[in-house]
Length: 549
Image (cartoon, rainbow, N blue to C red; front, top):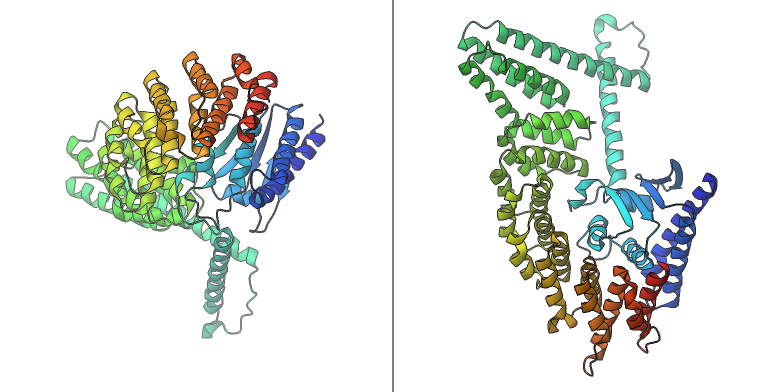
């Protein structure tokens, strides 16, 4: 297929997603229009996969790209599919050739949700994670875990523009006033253009930064030329003032250079231990609430920050920076700022995990969830003892995140706690616990899930929850799970037949996922069942086993 044809089909698929988003929101699942929409969407993807292994879409704020070609653009805020994905952190979506019809349907149902109007606790990234798609992958700005108010991009842009205009107006006024003195009244003032003013402002900022660097160089020379402790203390005081000044004006790079220079001095064998001890108080000053507060202002200001520079800066922070970083993490207003704060806490948290874990006691649920995420990102299994203490947190979003972390970090020591979470009052938490068991992947974890599904109370749960559980146990793909599912499919009951049909449908669905064709004889018996749900799921499983669809 030619590239132009690929782009055309990719555009076609994207337009179909937009159309499906509206249709699925309007019609129930059993409506013919709904079902035709899903079939049409799947057909378009299948046609594309006849030639390509995957379809990857790169997402920007107002545009979507395929193979460096812009295939969608919408500058408006309303009905903007790119912004819908972008604001929750999605940066790339990839649909693989093996994508199942059910996967596409679940994806479209998530996309169709109205996050602005409906009472939905999670963002799109969390919902995608919960579905754990096998053939739909995504790249996300990891701050998708941070549930705070949505960024108003247009408002922020307008405010920044007004700030810039104000700065230029003030500079023009100062420039003009400077020539309004009595002794120069006869001079004709030629107004500067906006471009001239912007250039002048940049030059002034550059000149200021250069002088700050020279100031640091002078102070370090004072340290080398010191004649006693008193001189060193004075130089250290000057260094703190210079850091304070640089951070006030957002000059992180110059502060980083100063900290590198300081490390070289501390490592100098000619420096006495007493002198080194005194100089080591400077990194502690860098992590003080005063300097971290200045850092928070820089992050929230929208100022461009080089990612590598910030990472190096964070590495110079000592563990005393943890408490103020946690404090400002809950106060930062922008996603970008919170992302940087999380990066800094991931670095410093490794230096004192108990101190970082104190953030789990914060009254703000979103701060607690961020701390859990940071502990999970650090990956130290010592965090388990702190996570176990908050597994029954009052906020469902926190409970889900801590369960996810326990599934990734733990094994035998978390099994009992996760087993209790399978009976949580909230279905989302119960499903999260089941997925955590799948992450552990042990025989004990499998047995716990099979026992839970076999219980009488499980049959009364919502169909979608039961389907999630059956999908999770299909990951073991062994003889024990296969036999378990076939027994459910063949089971007979004269009471509660509606619920029994749901269980049979789920078993058929799971057998299709396992991929063992030995299930075909059992499934064939239900492809003409009088129960539509069971008939549809049995037929779908047969298609998967016979044709891989």
